[in-house]
Structure formats: C-alpha cells, structure tokens
Length: 378
Image 1 (cartoon, rainbow, N blue to C red):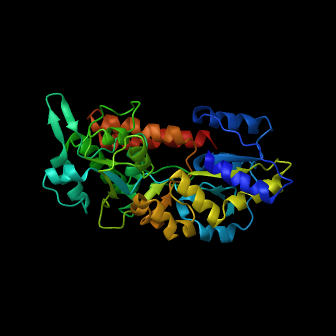
Image 2 (cartoon, rainbow, N blue to C red):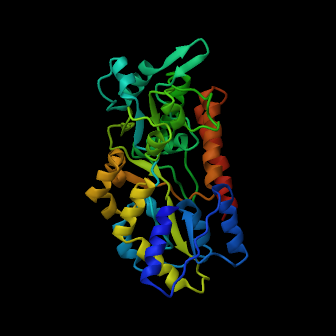
Image 3 (cartoon, one colour):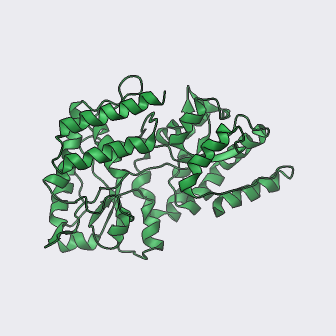
C-alpha cells in the first residue's frame, strides 16, 4: 500500500492538475467489486488486476490499449505479459512476475543432520533426499521431507513437469490436453510422492495455514513455494536459518516452468481520463519506479531491466534463485476460470494420490471438466 502511495504522490507532484483517489478493498471482495463496476459501466479509471483476470476484460473491449506494445514486449518476460496481451496488443502492464515454481525453502540443518551435504541437483536426488528427511511418529508424518501440497503448487508443478519434458498441455480451441505421455508421466511422478515415496501427505491440505507456515514451524525439511514466502519467514516467524534454493528439473532439460501473469495495472476504455490513466501506468512502469515498487513489496520483477539491476538483488538476496530462471517461465495460458481450473486439478490429484482414481482416468476427468468450463466461458 505504501509503495502505491509513494508513486502516486510523486506523479501528482509532477502533474499538479491530476489528483488520484487511491482506494483499497479486501482481496476476498475485490474481484467481484471490479466485475460489478465494469458491468455497471462505472469502472475505476485505473485498476490493479491479477493478470489471469485481464483477458475477460480485454476481449470484451473494456480496457484501454497501452501504446508501444511491440517495444514493451521486448522489455518484459513472457510469462508476466501473457495475460495482458490480446492479438499482439497490450491492455495493461504487469508490476510483478508471479512465480511459484523453481525454488524451494530448505532447512540446511535438517539436511546436515541426515548426512546430506548439499541441496538436491537432480529430481532423483530430490526424491531420495526427501525420503531420508521425512520423519514419522506413531501418528504419521511428523516432518515432511518435501512438501508441495498447496493449492497453487500441485497444479504449477504438474504443468511445469510437462514443460520440462518438452511437452505441451494446450490443444486446440483453448482446450487443455492431458492425454499425452508427458502428462501421464508427470502426474504419475507427482502422485507417487504421496502414494509410494510418502514424503508428504494430504493432512494439512486446504487448511488455514500455508505450506510455508508449516515449514517455518519446522514441520517440513523442504517446501516447494514461491519466493514471496521468504518475507513471511523473516518478518513473521523471525526465522533466519533457512535457504531458498533451486528445485531441480524433472528431466535433464532446463527447469522450464508455468506461471500466471501477476498483479499489474490497467486503464478503463470508458474512462473520461483515459489519457492521464495510461500516462500514469507508463510512469509507474518506468525502470526506477518499478525497481522501488518491487523492492518495497518483495515481489519478483516482471521487467527485465529491473530484474537485471544489481541493486535489486543486493536488496533482496533471497531472490537469486528465482531471478536465475525468469527467462524459462512460460505463460500458463488462456484459462477461463482460474479458481475452477486449479480446484479441478487439485481435487483429482487427491483422488489419484490416495488410490481412489487411476492416474489415466483422473487425467481424463480433469481434461473433460476443464474443457467444459472453457467452453462455457466463450
């Protein structure tokens, strides 16, 4: 919030004829409030949007085009820009790179106590280390060796494992295709971590706490989560004896990963102040302003020049693992209903991991359910 207030104050100082009324809302109601305002034809001049929400607005002509699309597309990474792009034009600009893959939290002391000198460098090492690090008592798993069972990471990991085999998960007409050998191999390996390797379980899935909370409480040795969790560890749990390290690729290929377009800002097509609104977006997206915004919000830069600025890494050294792989990120694709997409994969993952549904059948059910949802939103 302070980061926005600072850039707004600076902009108003440079433009005395412009006054920006900054309003905030709880996340739980924000998306619905945005939809209602656009439906009522009384949208805000400028709005913060999550990148996955943007296509619903841009394809219906509700957002103003940002000029200079061709040049801007060379200045940003692919994944954060995907949701803001329609037919080669930009309808808003991302402020952050929403990355949940590629890095994990580890407790070096736990690894040391189990005779593991370094973090795993291959997928096989990851599984072997996770088995070794898992601690059980009479009630089940006491310390998870490798926790990836969160609402975001099951889906992101599954899709990324497909990409790391040089596979694809989108077919024609915005339909997903999970009937591929790559999808079958990825889901088999992922469910096996629960069913056979037993390095994590489903006992905390869907609870109030995040997997990173359990990590900082010492209940997992390695936890797959985005770098944003580092701030929670340092500031909330006051934990310092942890590291954020690369997660090895599922294959010998580079660790490509799937990512949503994160938070960014858009201007309303119907705004009476559209020119000023777009000008503010351009101003906020300057390298210096984005550097300050990403530093103060502990977010990963979406813009290459900011990510490559040594000052950013100097202020956020835990970000190195993520910064090293940003060029490997692929936009997750044209998901019509983000929450439904993730919930469908997560629901069937639980059935497959507990043996209530075979992997092949589970993937068929996921594909059928998601594609029906995609069609309903056309």
